[in-house]
Image (cartoon, rainbow, N blue to C red):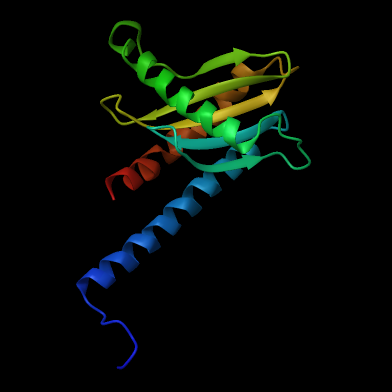
Amino acid sequence: MDGLPAYNEETQNISTFFILLKLEQQLFQKFCDQVISLDSSIRFAGIADEDGKILAVSERKGLKPLLTPEERAQYAITAATRQYTRLRWEYLLGKIYYASSHYASLIRATIPITNDNSKLSYVLLLSFDVGTENFHEIIMKKIIPLVKKNTTRLLKEVEL
C-alpha cells in the first residue's frame, strides 16, 4: 500500500517492545498502588530499577510532596547505589530486609528486590508519616510479604 511503511520483522519487534514496556509500567504502577493501600501512614511508594531510574510511583491521596520530581529522581539514584553497598555485606551479615532513615519531616525506607543470588533488580522506595512508631511492623508484616508475593513476577520483567 502506498504511504504506509512495510510491516516486517523489525516493525513487529518494535511493536512488541512497546507493548511489553507498557505492560511493565502497568505492573509497577499496580504494585506501588497496592503498597500505598496497605497502611494509612504510608505517604509514598516508588519502584526504581538497579540504576535508580524511577519506574512507577504512588502517593497517598491529598499528600503535598516534600520533594520535587527532580529531587525524587536524585534520591532514587542514591538509594540504588546504597543498596548495592549494603548487598555486599549480606554474605557476612545475612539478608537485608530494609534500610531506614528518620528525618524531621518523614521516615524513609528502602527495600531491595533481588534474585536468589542477591543481585539487585529493583529498589522499593517508601516514606511514612514522621510519627509512625510501628513502621518496622508495617514493613515486616505488610510490605515485605507483598514484595515476596510479587518478586517472581517483578523479576520476570528484568528477563524480557
